[in-house]
Each structure stands twice: as C-alpha cells, then as structure tokens.
Length: 252
Image 1: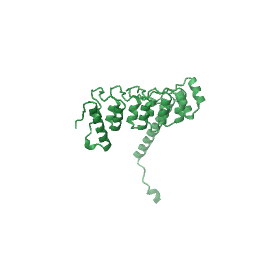
Image 2: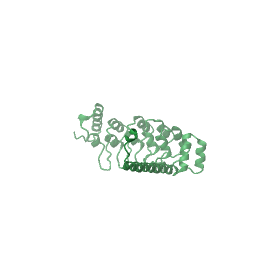
Image 3: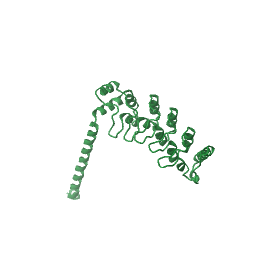
Image 4: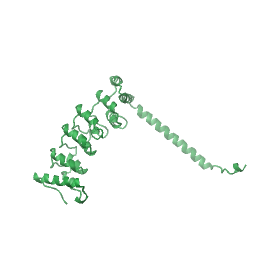
C-alpha cells in the first residue's frame, strides 16, 4: 500500500506531450524513409550500374549499358558515377566505369570533372590512371574554366601538381575570370609554387578581370608574419622580377 501511494501520478499534460513528440518523430522518420527510397529509385538504371561497377561485374555493366544505362549518369548530389567512385575510394568501380566508356570530362554540379577531382586526392593513382588513359591535363572545369592544376594547388597536393605539369599542363592557364595559377598561388600563400610557376613559364604580367597581377596578393602580408620559407620565396620572386625589369609592386 505504501509503495503504491509513494508513486506520483504522471501529469496528463506530459503524457500528451510525449505522444505528440512520438508521432512527430515517427512522421519525420517515415518522410525520410520515403525520400531516401524515392531518391534511390529516381534513376534505377544508374543505381544498378553503380552497384555493378562496385562489384566489378563487367558483364553486367555491358548488359546495363546495352539496355540504355548511361555511364555518365549522376547521383542525387550531382556527381557523375565516375566521380562518386573516386569520392568513396572505390578503385574497382572507378576502373570498371572507365572501361565502360565513362566520359572523364563530364562535369559535376560544381563543374569539376573526374580529372579535377582526382587532382585533389591524396591517392595519386586516380590521376595517374586518367592521365595514362589520355585525359587532358588541361581539362577545363565546365563552369569556371579552371584546369586541374588549380584544384591540385587548392589542395596543396605537390605530387599531383608535378604529375600534371609533367603531363604537359600549362603553367599559364587562366580561369573564366582571367585569374592565373600565379594569382591562385599568391592568394592562398603558396609562395613556393609562385616561384615554380614563374620558372615554368607563367606570365608575371597577366592581369585578372579586375586588372591586377599576382603581385598585390603575393606581397600583401607583412614581412614580420612570414615564415622563413615564405621570406626566402618573396626575395626570390623580387629578384626574379627585377632581373627581367618587371616593376615590383611591393608596398611594404
């Protein structure tokens, strides 16, 4: 009797609140499940092709493509299947899709092609495979015109930058806004690559859409905050410009 009397009654408003929350949660889960199912089924042929590629099933891939599956189909995030394979590190699917004729120049939602994406990966084997297969080292981003060197530089991936340059990538490439690799390297403070791009033939006088060279960005930081390597690179660039009678735009 004492035990029963010691249990406080559960307030009715709390019970109602719990029921409402439970119903809302189950509704949300149901909506999520429906959405995921619909997304997955939005292109069943592409889904089947992706599964076959991951399994390395060349015969199934050929059958699906013969039946109309598109090897350049995109997933729900706008990534072509070939790029999706790179993103998840699926080498077997990547190679299977290449063998099936996937186009390495197809752009994702952001305009990057498979070559651009491969240029950003720590695993250089993707980029090596694409270049060995004939993909251009200067493949343009389908939206902003950047070449894969811009992506490798953004990722600060020295190995892939060298691979692209060795494959003939142009050091004087520009994007759709007139910015060069020198502009990019200077903006992200990759001072060592400013030096190397100049030595590789990049035009130090090239101006972007707003009319500036790479120099304002390169010389922007105060000397006091630079690392020893950055100071050395700055001095190298300054001497390189002076030797070629190019005005130095260092305001410090």
